Image: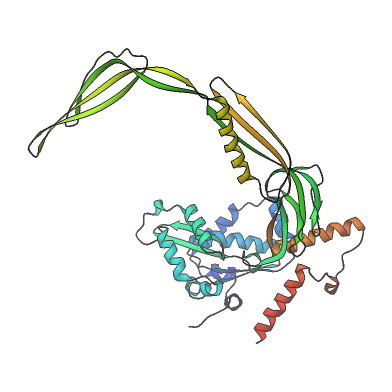
Amino acid sequence: MVEMSLKELFEIGQSFESSVGEGTKGERARIFKNNSRLNLTDEMISFIENIDYEVNFLVSGEIWCPDFQLNATVLKRFLDLNPNFNMSVITMARGKKFMAPALGIDKESLKNELYKEGVKPGVYKKSIDRKIVRENIMLKFNQIAYVSINVKGTNIFVNITKKDESQNADENSNYCNIIAEKDGIIEKVVPRSGEAIVDEGDIVKKGDVLINGANTSALPEVWATTFYEAKKTSNYIDVKNQRTSNKKNVYTISFYDKKFKILRNIKYKNYEIENKTHELKLGDYTFPIKITVSTFYEVKKVENKVDVQKLKEELSSQVLKELEYKIPVSARIIDSKDKYNVGKNMIEYVVTVTTKEDIAKLDILSKSEAESIIKSNEEKKSKEEGEQKPSNPENRPINDIRNEFKEDIKSNTDNEEN
């Protein structure tokens, strides 16, 4: 089977203007109409204009396609705003044949997954929940960055955007952020690598970033005061229903789906009900008549006091067992407080334990995220020192993430030459 790379597909494609020129008068008019309706904020325009590296858009589509008319028009506006942007358009047939293999996506697996999600011939288009389909496909295929699903008439257009290689979840760097594994009050930060953004005495929540751009070969420690609480409650007055000698029966006669109830005045304040159903049978035949007898038993509330001291011991045992499960072995217990809260008929036992532990948790960064953080830190440091950052790549530290990029680029270049 003949294969083509994304680079080869981009080179043989045509310009946006050429692809639009192949459409009918009405199709070309819709392009200009969409362009006139496109409003970008000043912030977005500024962001696009300030991108200082080359971006190539490879589009598989044709002028008659409504999705192409919308999305390609937006990309054309990007091209008008920034000369670093380029767009190449290939036909839908060529895209279907070559783009899935070039993107590393198994076309049959994707098609089967879409079928499972209900995107298939003959389906009622309004029954397709595009948001759910999009999320499930992106979860199933890790190399897909976005899925666009558009319904036009009797056609469904599914467009796939692949993740950039440096943003792929499998392409992790040796850099990470240190985040808080749980709530606490910072006691001590041992950075070792990265930039600490919390100080002693700061209150942090679970998931807060504690250290930016740390290296996994020199993991930091962040010690904090943490708190664990466990509580259990129980009734120390056991209330039970005790039946008296008073009772009354209420009869309900059912004939098919009709019900006739013989009502009686039940004046009991507290009662329990027992139901018994009787059927009329003659041999194997059951008549469509049923009689249900509902017996109302009068009850009175009887209180039995439980041994409070024994109950406290039981609650204490349950609470300590729960805390033993909650508190990690590495945590150092500093203090503990307990108390009993006694209510009208309830008793509650609460234990609060204060500990000191390392709450640092790794959040591995992709290469692009690591590069962005390192660049930001270098610019900040350069600004503080009033010096320009060195332009010589050989002056970078040995473990600098950009050295990995340099090696990757060299490796890819050698492979292309071979």
